[in-house]
Length: 137
Image (cartoon, rainbow, N blue to C red; front, top):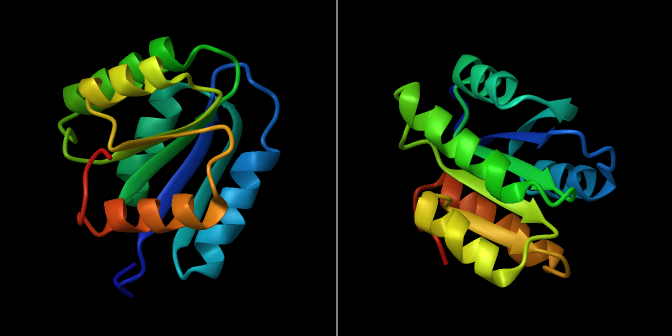
């Protein structure tokens, strides 16, 4: 939109039906000055990528609690590359074990936030990613 605020797309891919945590992140980002595009529940990887490209976002954030984070993450990161937006950062959150977080980072995730991550730290990290100040931690 040209107003200098980071544009962050948030979504729940797959069949996971719980989005309370992602809504907390959305409100935190909004309160920190970001523009949040919230796609909601049960989005496909294609829908997430289409919206990210259409909305010209700075970051894609997905929350996965279903245990499908590696499969969905691989598809999302590969799809991003296939569509020519491989430099668009993607952050993941949810019930993601440390070894899987490391694998997501090795596949190209900008950051991964597991259960118990502090809200202020998550918001600050996503904003740094949006500003291209950092990549994976």
